[in-house]
Length: 63
Image (cartoon, rainbow, N blue to C red):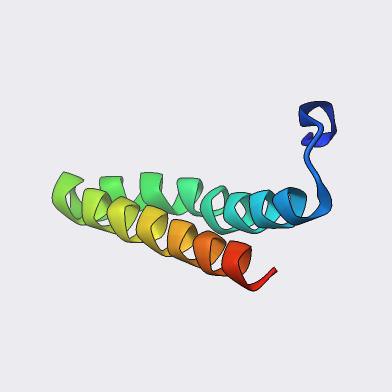
């Protein structure tokens, strides 16, 4: 999936970690929206993006 982008090793690792942290939570977000409403779902979405980008940024600094 990321091969056509021509990323280096470091970029590929960071991209994979960020993608893995975000995509499985999409289905969870839909269920949260149905069960708890828009406010709770949007708060979860914000936390998910913030955490995944923070981890990706830290990983980028470490590697």
